[in-house]
Image (cartoon, rainbow, N blue to C red; front, side, top):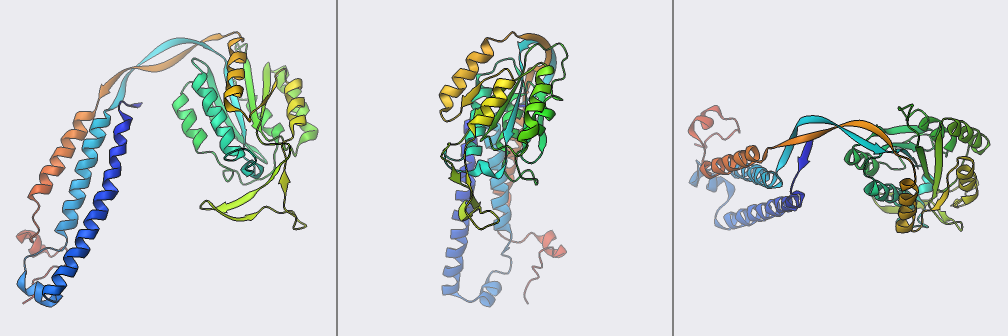
Length: 348
């Protein structure tokens, strides 16, 4: 496992595009200045040993060396020793709706981003609980199995979007059925499933049956509603630019509304509670209090106890590349010239 000590130094990587732009500006300026002095043919006769590729090579060496120094400042560390620790917590699975209706912007910035922020903030409040993630639309798909790696959970969470599942619709029952397979500890007394959705359910007839089966497995189901009952159209965008609004088969603009009723029914049948997700802070605080009241199950987990610094390798490579860059001259190298790797034959 890799640990980064000083991530703030990654901002220094913004220097790289600036250097590239300055280099291109310099090339254009040199080209124009040389053309004022003489044409290309005459310049080649006057400077037969000038290399047209060494400048680019020097830039590449400089940028690679700069990257090495910056990564060295970040101080990456590699875990070298695993140890088993005892932790107490609850097994939590998040089932996140990624159907197209979650693109509606009746809650800023849109429903799917709001759902992801809610889950991320809930994870921030956890200490020793195990978590898993499910994405669902017309079908359910496991994103992350039960784990204590919150960093990995956030990485998978941020990658979720409404294009990740080809089958559209909203099959909450499939998400619940898949969640029942996530809990791998038969002795865990508290199993919690959070369904984050706008409540549009195309499998309403079988959803409550799935809830009953989940309750029999000892799972408590909480639902978090994202969106507004008034509803909103579904924008279809490309590269962040609005192209059109989703329409039905009759050509009418589809208005998707938060269906709190089905979410309340699911939470009631699932021995949980319905939570309004419009206010992130209030929703997260409520969930935090709910989890604190639950009995914690002790379990063993492996984690890295020792990390070894790796900054010296990156600093060494960075200084070496910068050192090499100094000794790369703009003129042609004799032995490379003989090989003619860059088709730089001298003009007679």
